[in-house]
Length: 97
Image 1 (tube, rainbow, N blue to C red):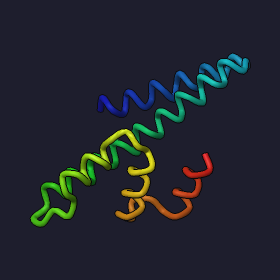
Image 2: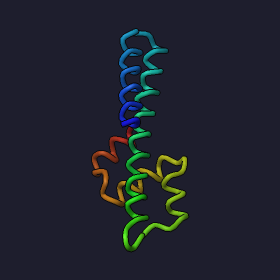
Image 3: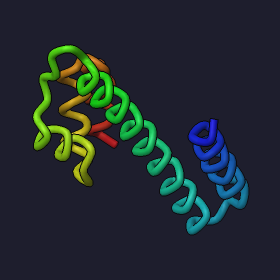
Image 4: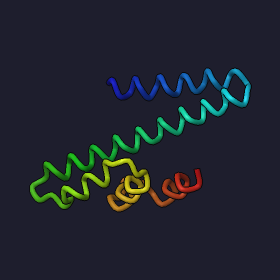
């Protein structure tokens, strides 16, 4: 529940910033929305890594897990794509953003 609250709070703040109708506030809204997307993607990766780790036959090495859960966004997107957790269209949308 705490994670959902964090997401809603950021999106609510982004909506407030957009309501000001000033370039700086619009930029802040964009940053908040981008951060929200990254948090959701990271959370999804955490769930899939956890599921792999607790499965009878884990496929990910410790190095894979560190890479996927690290700081590089591209690693997360590649992992989600390899796990069929995002569609080709979603990946293209993320790449274009």
